[in-house]
Image (cartoon, rainbow, N blue to C red; front, side):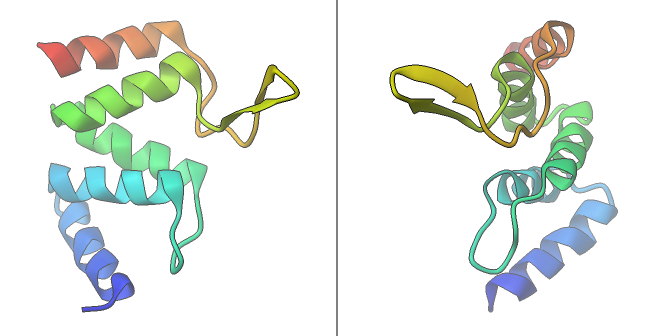
Length: 102
Protein backbone atom coordinates (compact mmCIF):
# COMPACT_ATOMS: atom_id res chain seq x y z
CA UNK A 1 0.00 0.00 0.00
CA UNK A 2 1.46 3.41 -0.95
CA UNK A 3 1.83 6.27 1.50
CA UNK A 4 -1.00 8.12 -0.23
CA UNK A 5 -3.29 5.11 0.14
CA UNK A 6 -2.41 4.71 3.82
CA UNK A 7 -3.04 8.40 4.47
CA UNK A 8 -6.32 8.11 2.57
CA UNK A 9 -7.39 5.34 4.95
CA UNK A 10 -6.27 7.35 7.98
CA UNK A 11 -8.26 10.32 6.70
CA UNK A 12 -11.42 8.24 6.28
CA UNK A 13 -11.04 6.90 9.81
CA UNK A 14 -10.16 10.32 11.23
CA UNK A 15 -13.26 11.87 9.72
CA UNK A 16 -15.30 9.18 11.48
CA UNK A 17 -13.76 10.21 14.80
CA UNK A 18 -10.91 7.68 15.13
CA UNK A 19 -8.49 9.40 17.55
CA UNK A 20 -5.49 7.24 16.58
CA UNK A 21 -5.95 8.13 12.90
CA UNK A 22 -6.33 11.80 13.83
CA UNK A 23 -3.11 11.61 15.84
CA UNK A 24 -1.23 9.94 12.99
CA UNK A 25 -2.40 12.61 10.55
CA UNK A 26 -1.35 15.31 13.01
CA UNK A 27 2.13 13.84 13.26
CA UNK A 28 2.35 13.45 9.48
CA UNK A 29 1.42 17.07 8.84
CA UNK A 30 3.71 18.28 11.63
CA UNK A 31 6.72 16.80 9.89
CA UNK A 32 5.66 16.39 6.26
CA UNK A 33 6.90 13.53 4.10
CA UNK A 34 7.92 12.75 0.54
CA UNK A 35 4.29 12.55 -0.56
CA UNK A 36 2.75 15.15 1.80
CA UNK A 37 3.82 18.69 2.54
CA UNK A 38 4.10 19.98 6.08
CA UNK A 39 0.87 21.78 6.97
CA UNK A 40 0.70 23.69 10.23
CA UNK A 41 -3.07 24.17 10.02
CA UNK A 42 -3.77 20.49 9.32
CA UNK A 43 -1.34 19.32 12.01
CA UNK A 44 -2.92 21.52 14.65
CA UNK A 45 -6.45 20.56 13.60
CA UNK A 46 -5.87 16.78 13.70
CA UNK A 47 -3.83 16.82 16.92
CA UNK A 48 -6.51 18.92 18.62
CA UNK A 49 -9.27 16.55 17.45
CA UNK A 50 -7.38 13.56 18.86
CA UNK A 51 -6.40 15.32 22.09
CA UNK A 52 -9.95 16.44 22.77
CA UNK A 53 -10.91 12.75 22.71
CA UNK A 54 -8.26 12.01 25.32
CA UNK A 55 -5.59 10.49 23.05
CA UNK A 56 -2.58 10.60 25.40
CA UNK A 57 0.16 10.99 22.77
CA UNK A 58 -1.83 13.72 21.00
CA UNK A 59 -2.32 15.56 24.30
CA UNK A 60 1.39 15.37 25.04
CA UNK A 61 2.48 16.45 21.56
CA UNK A 62 -0.07 19.26 21.44
CA UNK A 63 0.94 20.40 24.92
CA UNK A 64 4.57 20.59 23.84
CA UNK A 65 3.65 22.45 20.66
CA UNK A 66 1.82 25.06 22.71
CA UNK A 67 4.56 25.14 25.35
CA UNK A 68 7.51 25.61 23.03
CA UNK A 69 6.13 26.19 19.57
CA UNK A 70 7.48 24.15 16.67
CA UNK A 71 10.23 24.81 14.21
CA UNK A 72 13.02 26.08 16.46
CA UNK A 73 16.55 26.05 15.14
CA UNK A 74 19.90 27.20 16.45
CA UNK A 75 21.91 29.57 14.29
CA UNK A 76 25.17 31.15 15.44
CA UNK A 77 24.46 30.12 19.02
CA UNK A 78 21.00 31.71 19.21
CA UNK A 79 17.60 30.07 19.04
CA UNK A 80 15.42 31.23 16.17
CA UNK A 81 11.87 30.28 15.31
CA UNK A 82 11.11 28.90 11.87
CA UNK A 83 7.62 28.17 10.57
CA UNK A 84 5.64 27.56 13.73
CA UNK A 85 2.86 24.99 14.04
CA UNK A 86 1.34 27.15 16.74
CA UNK A 87 2.42 30.06 18.86
CA UNK A 88 3.37 29.50 22.47
CA UNK A 89 0.33 29.47 24.73
CA UNK A 90 1.01 28.53 28.34
CA UNK A 91 -2.66 28.01 29.23
CA UNK A 92 -3.26 25.53 26.40
CA UNK A 93 0.11 23.88 27.05
CA UNK A 94 -0.86 23.21 30.66
CA UNK A 95 -4.31 21.93 29.63
CA UNK A 96 -3.01 19.35 27.18
CA UNK A 97 0.02 18.31 29.23
CA UNK A 98 -2.28 17.76 32.24
CA UNK A 99 -4.56 15.64 30.07
CA UNK A 100 -1.55 13.57 28.98
CA UNK A 101 -0.58 12.63 32.50
CA UNK A 102 -4.03 12.15 34.01
